Length: 337
Image 1: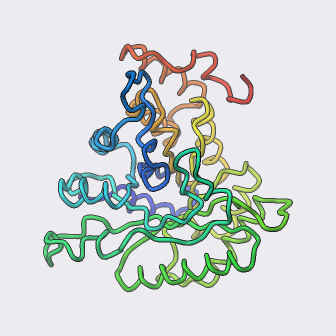
Image 2: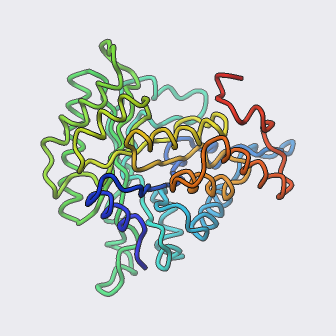
């Protein structure tokens, strides 16, 4: 089955002015949030867990893959093992499966007692690539393609020579291993989580870090695309216009209002982004499939953020789902409420 990711990337690289946009659902929260990863139940029962189960989380993944509106489904290796390797739900799907290939310490966000995210990011990988891509599994024969051949690798720089040197060294080693195994990856670069020294312009620091780091990477080990925080129009345009072969994407961040999510995608695309990977924004939506329908419409240039919010609320009404916020409150930025 042809994958829309590969088709769109080819068109974007041959014609950076094209309007193709890659949409991904980040369902890898179990790599960072522990029990809370699948989301909080809207009406938890007394004495029962307030969180959804991992089985419910995976059921949503199945439904979204079946919907065929996202281009990438990002998962933990354990979820990929169930859905991609055992159930093979991506084999006849245009959606590309991907795994989180590393889990540095700044994403260890579980519970109120965990303080890892307040300390400078330290590289770590739970994933074993041979296991993740099915090299050692019975299904990995010469006639069957690998269940997964794409991963997300994340780095965080904190303006500290020791920590940042360690982070860069770990990424270099990963790139080399991935090259040897024919494994593709995309690169996530977070904002500094615990900077050792002042950083007056965080957006410029992140952009400079990306350009400097990738200057030493040849075509065999470069990421397919980037996933970075959206720092606003100027920073996005600056990075996107630097190198037309560098496909820039944004991460979703915290939930916010529905307008926040839709406006972020619309504005980032306007200033050069060609990918959006939304995790919490999708997972915390009242109805994930309807939410994704509007993300796709925005990504394809078929609607505007205000209209998408109205359409989404109309879908909730038809489904008899009570919205978290009124249409009026959901139609403006969270900070404006």
